[in-house]
Structures are given as C-alpha cells and as structure tokens.
Amino acid sequence: MAFTTEIRKGMIISYNNEPYIVIAKEFYSPGKGGAFTRTKIKNIKTGKILNQVFKSGEKLDELEVETKSMQYLYADEKDAYFMDPISFEQLTVPLEMVDGGTNYLHTEAKYIIIIYEGAAISVQLPAKIALNVVETSEAVKGNTSGNATKEAILETGAKVFVPLFIRQDDKVVINTETGLYVSKEN
Image (cartoon, rainbow, N blue to C red; front, side, top):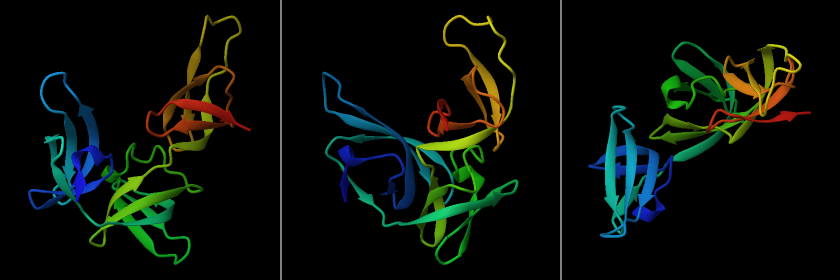
C-alpha cells in the first residue's frame, strides 16, 4: 500500500482491479480545501489512458514488478529488442512503451526494463545519453546574436538543436526527458 503523496512517474498501481502505470503526476495544494494529486495513468493490458485525481491521504495498491538491466540490440517497425548481458536472454518490447521511440536507444547503453506478469511494460531511459552527430550545417561567422543554435541529426535519427560550434562526428549529451542538448562529450 502506498499513500497518494508517494505517487511517482513509472509507478505500477492497481486501480479498479486493473494494473496501471503512472505516466504523469502533479501535486496540488489549493489554499482552500484538501490537497490532491492529479495523475495520468495508462492501463497496462489495454493501453487506455485515464486522467485520475487522488485525494491526499488515500491509499493505493502498488503492484510487484521485476526490473532488469538490459542492453538494447535493435528495433523494427513496431518492437525494440533487448538482451540481458549476463544470461543473454532476449526480450521484445513494443516501441509505444519506449518514450521517444528509438530516438534514445543506443546499442552501447543499458536500460531498465520493468516486467509485470512476465511481460515488459515499460523501459526507463537513462537521464542523459551521449550520441554522435551524423549531420549538421556549418556555422556562418558573424551570423549570430546571443545563444545561436542549429539543427543536428543524431545517429539514432533524432533531431536536436545544438550550439554552432558542434560539428559532424562530434559526440553530444542529450537529456532524454526534455530532448534538449546538454553538453559536448570529449
């Protein structure tokens, strides 16, 4: 059992006797009346998304899940494939369960896979990931005023705005939650 104040993104709960994953939450404490948590929850079995409000002090059933650290192998049109680096067991995860699709999936990175009743239900991306720039335009000298950026295409196909000094084949660090450039990796 968990209280509504303990709700967090990625938490697996039982709501109306169905398993749901919390995909967004906001805590509100209005000046008048009781505090509450507004959530967006997704049914694990059907994929249906609900907007649900939980009053402060309510208890929720948190479900038991298994987590595994796995390496990304490859993806096709609808699924991503991961491998346990110790047992070499492979797991298929539908791409709709991966935030950003394949934009932040890289074969050198490890990902936390959340498993419920033997099936993968969520992929936790690392907070930041380093990716190579495969295409970007050259900066034009004197063409700036302030923090100028340009678009770059990364090795995964993701498009991100980077500072003008970034060149093709540079490695950049991207925040996977916001999709924004963080720094250049040496």
